[in-house]
Amino acid sequence: MKETHKRNWAVASKKLICLLIISAVEWYQLDISCTLTRQLHTIEAECIFLNICIIMIFNLVVFLLVNRLWLTVMISEVLWAGVAVTNFYVIQYHGMPFTITELKNFRTALHVLKSYDLTIGKTPIKILVVCGLVIVYCLWQRKKEEIRKRSIKGIALPCVGILICVIYILIGFYSPTPIKPGKTIGWSWEEAYGKYGYVTCFLEDLYYKNSAVNKPEHYTLEHVEEILTSYFKTVDRRVIVCMVGDHCPSFAGEIASTDLSLEEKALRLRETPFYIWSNYSIEKCDKLGSVGMIYVAPLLLWLADVPLSGYYQYLIDLKEQVPIITSYGKYFNSDRDCFSVGDGTYGKLVNEYFQIEYSNIVKAVEDTTFYE
Image (cartoon, rainbow, N blue to C red):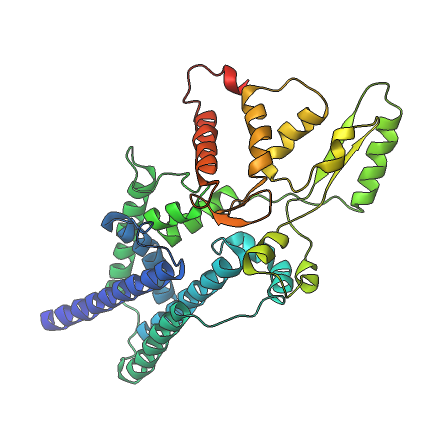
């Protein structure tokens, strides 16, 4: 009897170790899908284990549901390998990692992808080769794995594994000195993903973007413009109205020129016209050119001849040399030449902007008159 118990514990322990190994493999697949440079890849062992624990919980739950190791590993590997490959291509053609937002914009993403020629790179091949080997192993193990009835001990060990993972995750996220702070994704997603891993950053994005704004019934932009212009035309004071969209329409990918470079196409597929209306003549509106989102607020005040703070005047001057600073690590000069942040003729100006912007956000400067 004791020998039987020992054998059962040994079998359960081996299955747990197998799930831990496959969780580590899946972390690796997700990690390489981010295609980060060595300089940005600064993740430490404790954070690697935090990512593995999150994947491990999923795998253990699946195992408890299906009660077959080979099936659990196959389901898990196909899912996470699929996410890894998707993440690779989303980064290549969207400039940002795959998040839950991509699922919300699935139809738009399909329209955009039609304008690209998908190429198979080394990273997806690595991920798919590993996935193929795991599937072959699972099919081989299918014939060898004994079908056992569920037992208390067979359920207890996976539950203990889940509990250990949950405790480590809670410590990792919510301790006084967390392994993964709550908000880490800033201007450069590469730094956060390189330091904390894909899975933890995916959860961060999910946490901070889990609310959606519902569109009112019978909404049209034309109707909103009509309401605003009709109202402000009768107002006995100077009024400026600005409207700007947050993304390009879904059909943009279908009409984007195939002659554009990858950098120009990436910009065009994020570019939207903005609308400025006033109930009086503004001569300075004639030659605004391309405008990054960071400049919209100071630009409106400048057009209205409102006295600017030192910070807003700094942005107006910066716009003349670097009119477009994107959230995906690229910027464009006045000739629309593309550079990576930190490179190019204007790299110093962009880095100075990041320094000043950060000081503004965290209120690091005691004398705040420059920002007021």
